[in-house]
Image (cartoon, rainbow, N blue to C red; front, side):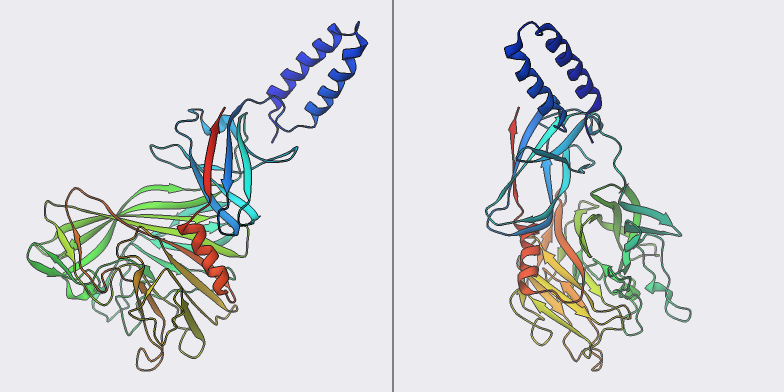
Length: 439
């Protein structure tokens, strides 16, 4: 959108200059040319706050989320500046979003393709921007928060306690998990409370074998009543033109519903879904743990624990497959390490899948993988995936420190090539370089 007020005022000044110079014809033509150029510029005489270069680096980029901390550049409210991409003499306004928090960080999508080695130029300019349309929505209803892009549901975070079916041990109850996860076609890709594992809850992040204050605590197998995870409160819920999502506080509770109940760890889930201009969903999940008491906790070596997904029961060894960044499949992925892994399979709305990506700063990166083999569950071959950083080593957590694990997921239709998976992971792990030139 043009900066109408600044442009109109500047145009009035030019008219006055032209009137004053009528006596001197040799300057008149230059002023007219200047006015013409001014009227074809979207920014006019808007003040440039900063010029921004975005370097693709060694990787080809496609519709990549990028961000920039502008704390040292401007303290203007985001309603008083615009972001424009510069291509030759053309200026195109770009939708951006200011992140909540102490740091003034803006996010936008590096739209379209950016070849390896290329540089794209943007400018922050002063100007009254209209309120951008909200594309990524976050709506609460009936104990759940649904994140959608335009009118298509992406994922649902369940903050109300979900109980198991009637007749099943009620201690299988749980809150603070994602289900459903939808495909772009609208198929449900997750599963909760399957009869073979009632404690499985779509996409969730508990730890299995831990040591706390001399006791062994299992936050995964919740029916044992040694531990569970509960939703506590929302820190924020965000909607916007670039991304939408939430931050939720969850408590890791030992000996729940007993006189010995105590919160051992607090966890913040930061989930954000991006407005990806493609027939796919891109979203991030960050878990940050800290101790709730003065006691440390050890996440002990165990074959599974941490960020995992139980897939739809439609997927079996007959109609699904998987691949990791190291070329492993369901035959040999379990126990291997990987930067990324994908699973996909048939649904009633077509083939769909999920690409899981691990961030290089994660503990024990590249992370060990827990993936059920093809003969899991009595030969059915149901699909379960887990990035498990403690699969082959302990992780000691101490009071007064934060411990974070960060993942990005691409939910896609059909198949995904190794080249596409690698490029999508690179966007996350080795993002474009964003540099600024202060004006």
